Amino acid sequence: MIPGSFDYLAAHSINEAVALLDQHGEDAKVLAGGQSLIPLLRFRLASPAILIDINRIDGLEYLREMNGTLHIGALTRESELDNSSLIRERYPILFETSAVVADPVVRNWATVGGNIAHADPANDHPATMLAMGARVVAVGPTGERVLPIEEFFTDIPFETALHPNELLTEIRVPAPVQGSGGAYVKLERKVGDYAIAGVAAYITLDTNGNVSYAGIGLTHVGQAPIKARDAEQSLLGKPLNDTSIHQAADLAAAATQPISDTRGPAEYKRDMVRTLTVRALRKALVRATGGE
Amino acid sequence: MSTHHISVTINGASYEGDVDSRTLLVHWIRDTLRLTGTHIGCDTTSCGACTILVDGKSTKSCTMFAVQADGRQLMTVEGLEQNGKLHPLQEGFHEEHALQCGYCTPGMMMTGLALLQRNPNPTEHEIRVGISGNLCRCTGYVNIVKAIQYAAEKMQATEEVPVSAGQGGE
Image (cartoon, rainbow over all chains, first blue to last red):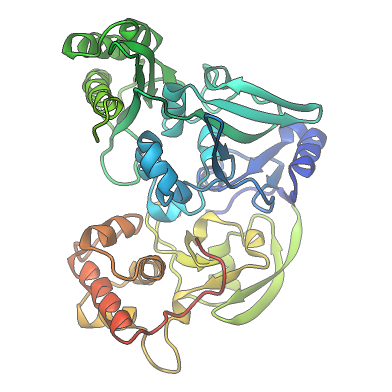
């Protein structure tokens, strides 16, 4: 299958990419790892007039923890998370997320920024970033702005709050603190498939053992990545135990709007979110209390 | 549609040509350069039959445009054999009967090569995870895993440096 015609432009700096986006606006699409975009072009589900390749921009691939924040360059490949001791040791939830993105060959090119900016409700990083309370950096012609991840996604699949002349350049994730832990659990039919359902959970316990932060993100059970706010709220100020975990799991399931398709009927997916939320919270609790 | 002049090194040899922006790398390699060892299986980034190395990284060449390869070092299955001598991976696939129809084999071997270059002594589990982006519908994978183990042992025993796709990589 051959994509429709387009003009290809390679940007060599963030400024050049933004200038090209500003010039071409809605006609242009950013080509990062291309592992979602190129299949879409081949199927002619998308036919932008111009592709702006950002792979030639130096300095957009990095994982850096500074002053309580993990900075992830937008062009960082999923395989770099797979192979990073920083991620494996300090961010097991991120390690688990990248490990289930497509397959190892795809992960050599697939980028974290692309996984988020593509805003596919089936992608895995959005749920994890929602759970962790990440922020994203968007650079446009007049400078940069930093958005909370929940404001980055809209209710429409494949659409984000990015303006047509803005480039996602960085994701900022809060570094773990005392008493914090998280997990991502994904149910998939086979390696490399999109999730039947996925749940990311991140919690922080205060010195009394009560939940002071709770984040729960859901994959592929609605039009957009879902932040399960009622479930998060229900956990705050209480110890994390079987009662509170199951209550949160019920609320997370209630926040879904799955559709019935080849991956299963809607009721099944909703039920799986309940089960996966229990598992993710239990795993998060183990990690928050020093276990693995 | 834009046309681009690209220069690429494949298996140590230089190639150049004009490509349309929408030409997929696998089509350029197969149809223009006639390096037909690289296969097209699914066209959906699922099967890995088109796997080659780009700057040392295993890459589904159906999911990259030829223009993106400009200036890069590529290696295809044709680069495994050296001076009439099979690469340990090729030998392993032969000895362990790791193919039946052979369609997935070039991609399997290139993924196996990238895996062994990064991890010369992988466990069975690491091999299985490593080739999980390459589909085989004949063998059930058992003998493919054995073939990669065979190659790992042979490459370590002879301290033979695997054919490199040049600098770069992880």
